[in-house]
Amino acid sequence: MWQEEAFSNRGRDVTQRFDLAVVGAGILGLAHALAAVRRGLSVVVIDRDAQANGASVRNFGFVTVTGQRAGDHWRRARRSRDVWAEVAPLAGIPIVQHGSLVTARHPESLTLIDAFLATDMGEGCRHLSPAQAHDLCPGLTDGLLGALWSPHELRVESRTAIPQLAAWLEQAHGVAFRRGAMVHAVALPRIATSTGPLEAEACIVCPGEDFLGLYPERIAAYGLTKCLLQMLRVRPAESFQLALPVMSDLTLARYDGYAMLPEAGSLKARIAAERPAYPEAGIHLIAVASADGSLVVGDSHVYADTPEPFASAAVDSLILDELAATLAIGDAEVIERWTGIYASGGERLMLRDAPEPAVRLVMVTSGTGASTSFAIAEETMADLYD
Image (cartoon, rainbow, N blue to C red; front, side, top):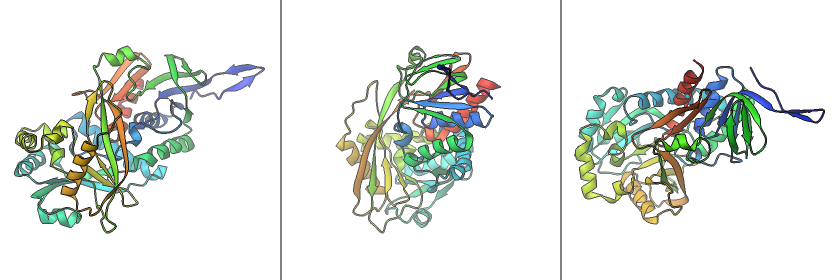
C-alpha cells in the first residue's frame, strides 16, 4: 500500500504519503484507523492535542448495549462491544467490569422493564427480584422493587484505554500519529497541517465537538449543538465493592431503548412530578468501578451552542444524592470532578457526510462514541471502499 516516509533528497522535502488520513485521535478516529489497517491500508492519524484530552477520555468507558435506541444504533453497539472484547486483550487494555444492572424503585419501572424484555433487545437480559439483585450486587441499598440485568456490557478505563489503543495501533499495525498538529485544509491528495503537508488517497474527518474547523458549512447543515456533562470520581468506604455497573430508574426514563417504549410515559411523568430537577438537568445515574475501587459517577446533560465552562455544585449534589439512594457507599469522598463536551444531534445519533468523493466527515452526535464507534468505522470503510 501507499506509504512513503518523509526524507530530504538533495535539500528537497518529500511529503509523507498514506492510503488514508484520519483527522481526530478520539475513539471514533482510532476506530477508523483500526478498520482501515484491517483492510491492509497505511494510515496516519492527525490530532491537534499532544495526548488524548477530549470526550473520549472524559466518560465512563462503559460500552453500553442494553438501552441503546432500537435498530441500527443497538446493532452498532453490539458489534462495537464484540470488537472491544477482541481488541482489548491484544492492546493490553483491562476489561474491569462486565454486564450492567438497572435498579427499579417505582412500580412504573417494573412495567417498563417487562416491556423492554418483550422486545428483541431484551434477549439475554433478566428481570431480577430484589433478593436476586442484592445477591448479584451486594452494594445496593434497600428499598428497590426489582432490577434489569444485562450480560452484554463491558467497561474499560477510558483515560488509559484510549492511549493504549493508540499505542497498539502504532506498534502492532504501523499507524503513524501526528500529534500537536492542526489540519488547515484537505484537498486530496494534499492535506495541509500546521506541522507540514502530507498526502493521502482518502481522508476521514472526525472533528468531535469542533464545528468550525474542517467543512464547517457541511456540519452547520445538520443543526448540531453541544452537550456539557458533569462527572465525578468517588472513593467509597473501604469495605464497599461494586460488582458491576449500576444505573437507576432515571436511566430507564432517559435511554432511548427504554424511554421510547409506550410504557415509559408513566415513569417519565412520575419523575417529572416528583423530582423535576433531575430531568431539567438531564441527570441520570451511572456508577462504574475502577480497578482501585473508586467509582466513576455521573452524569448530567446541558445543551447549548457554547456551553458555559462552569460546573454546577447543585448538579453534583443531585448526582451524589441519587448515588447514595442507590448504593450503600458509606462515607464517600469525591476525589475528582470534571466536565466534558460532545456534539449533539437531537434525534440524529450519528452522521456520515461525503463533502468530497474520497472524504468522509463522521461524527457521533449522541454521547455514545465508546459504545458504537467501531461499528460506525466499519460502515465508513465499506461506504468508502466497497
